[in-house]
Image 1: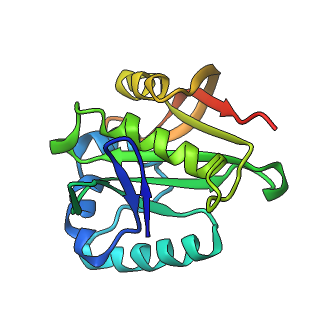
Image 2: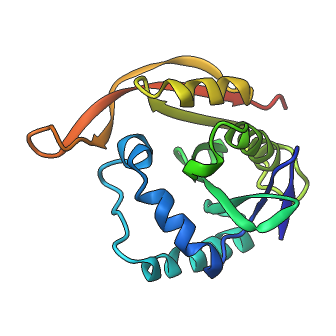
Length: 189
């Protein structure tokens, strides 16, 4: 299964992706901005087995799940991960997306191209789930994610004060709530 894009493809994650996926999750930038404090950080590479299996099951059902971001010229090399979840009731057809790009793949437009590909699949592709709205939010402190979202075609819609609890080792309980910038795109009916 492959979702082709503009110089980037999305495919289901495999067991071979686990090591690079684990490195991405433990990357300092990902821990700082990418994983909400309530999402557990895997402690071993093997703990990603369930995420690999869950992604395949979700795709089969066109349910929320994750995809590996890959270069079509080297589809076995994991560049990052992109995922979606329903924002509210399924009948609203509104999804939130999130992504992470491995440190050695940043700065090359990987995230921008992956988001564009993903939004197309989520909204208009015949084999996609045909959602009506895609949104992405990020800490207002994460300027790079704001640039990526805008370059991918997701407009700024506002700021949600204190919305996202992120890990912060300097905070008394290890968590600090961040204001987030909300980006979105609506697909015309």
